[in-house]
Amino acid sequence: MTETSPSARIEHVNLTVSDLDRSIALFQSLCGWHLRLRAMHGARGEFAHVGTDEDYLALWADGGDHSGQAKGRPLNHVGLQVADLDAAERAVRDAGLETFSHGKYEPGPRTFYFFHWDGIEFEVVSYA
Image (cartoon, rainbow, N blue to C red; front, side, top):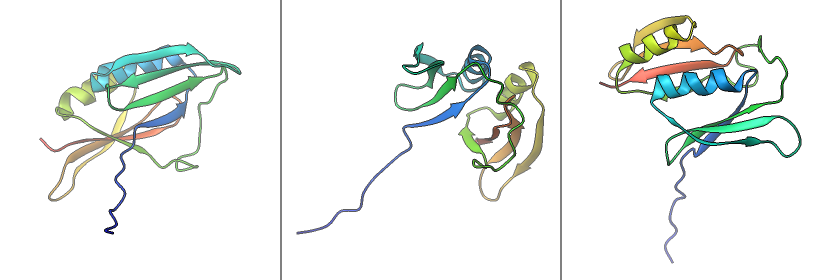
C-alpha cells in the first residue's frame, strides 16, 4: 500500500470586524470578490462571507468596537494576491486607509501592507 501526502488549501479565514458593511465593501473593491452569504449569527451578531466561489473571508460583527488590536496578537497578517497592485492600492486608499512598507521580494512579488480599521494587518502581493 502506498501512502499519499495530504493535500490542503485554506478555504476561509474568519475575522472579527467592527463594521460589517464597511469591511464587505473594502474586500469587494480591493479583490473584486462577491458577497457569498450574509446572515444573522445564531448566538449574536451578524456574519458575511466575501470571496470567490472557492475561498473567502468570513467576517463576523457582534456590534462591538474591535479596533486597536495589537499587531501580531494573535494574527501577524493576512496575505492577499492581486493581479494589479496599483489598482489594489487605490482601492485601499479610496477606503480611507493608509498603505506602507512597499517593497519587492526577489524573485517574487511587489508588495504593500495596510491595517484594516480593526487593526488587522494585510499584505497585498502581485507577481505581475
